[in-house]
Amino acid sequence: MPLKRELEVKVSKTEVVAAALPIQEHWLPLSNLDLLLPPVDVGIFFCYRKTKELSFETMVGALKKSLAQCLIAYYAFSGQLVTNTAGEPELLCNNRGVDFVEAFADAELMDLDLYNPDETVERKLVPERKHGVLAVQATQLKCGGMVVSCTFAHQVADAYSANMFVVSWAEITQSRPISQPPSFRRSLLLPRRPTAYHLSVDSMYATISAFTSPENQEPAAEDDKRTALSRIYYVKADQIDKIQALANDEKCFGKRNRRTKLEGFSAFLWKMIVSSKVSAGDGYCKLGIVVDGRKRLIDGEESQEKLIASYFGNVLSIPYGEKKIKELQEKSLSWVADEVHSFLKSALSKEHFLGLIDWVEERRPHPALSRIYAARATEEEPAVVVSSGLHFPVRKIDFGWGTPLFGSYHFPWGGKSGYVMPMPSPKGNGDWIIYMHLLEEQLKMIETNAAHVFIPLSSDYIYSCT
Image 1: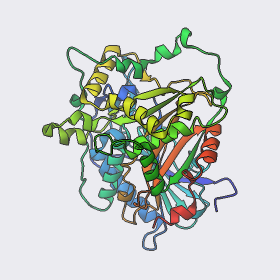
Image 2: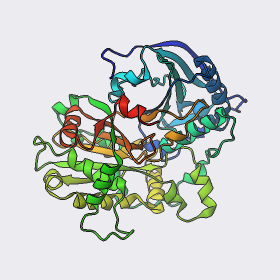
Image 3: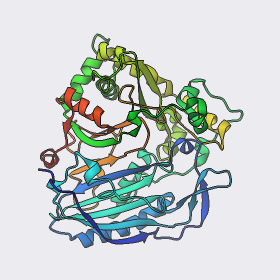
Image 4: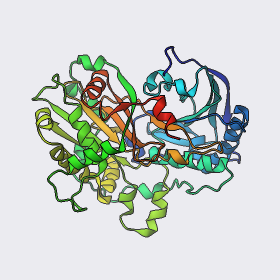
């Protein structure tokens, strides 16, 4: 059973861990795609059960030693984000180091209410980033278990990059070579001369000034004052298969036409967040999906594949669709999945990402954002972004004391739209872990209308992962 009282976490020690070898101080500019990210932080955490062979002090010592080695290759995480003369963020690679926090939580692993990460994870088990680009925390639990977590600046890295880092860190801790050294080659994402982009980019992104201009200012709605909440659920593999089957209903089941599990899930979510009677039938609802551009930029070029596959930074785009709520409520899941596929394919090309880079170049140094991130979303006219974490390597994060019992991203991102990230279950059986950051009313609606799909994460499920 989860804790009935508030989780107390006491910090016992904080120190700075720098790269084990000297790093020549230099500037590393952010790419044009990095500049599309707002100054928000992303958290990741991994839960480990007690090991009889190693004490907490021994494990922390191993983590610090390997982190110092890992930062030699991942030197960007050991630097600082500063503002350059043009007013843009830039990386100062000065080996400032990473704040490493040691803490103790007066609770057992099985008592942690991870279904409600706002109460147990936020700034308790996952550290607040105060200095530098990355912060790390190791928390000893009452049962002898351990939580290893980190928080990083999203302007420096996307989830793909963070996954590379934690896998490398775990490999070094076990005295293994890094399987995929990072590349910081910004020349891979340089704008073209002359610049060129499709008009569809204008519908996805805009300069911040466009959102703050007087003509775009609307009276604050009651929903703007409401706080979004974070929740973690699990979805059984058979439910994911059923949703995908419904998304492919009455379609040719050839490979070219088949809707993916992510498309089916996103379509199901799109319908669920407008399933309330409160939702206005004449209103609209937006859904966006984060697209990783690495595979798109490779586009069959073998010479580029290794460089781009190991690229560290943001290579993201967020296409989105907007549909009448009445349509989403009345149409079949397969129809909604077709709509998801339709807006998603606009960002699935090399030309789209090259065009996005060029679009940013024409507007620098004026900052820009995804339109759906800044969209004014309410309970009556919601908006949500789905970011696939299905490649989250939770089963690879073994620092030498076993694979995690559980792991998840934690990203209360601050945008006005909601945020949902599906990830693989540590069970490795096809189940999904779903992190959601939505308005409280939307979460209640999902739990009421899709209780058979989204099951609140429990200690029983976590302990069944072994």
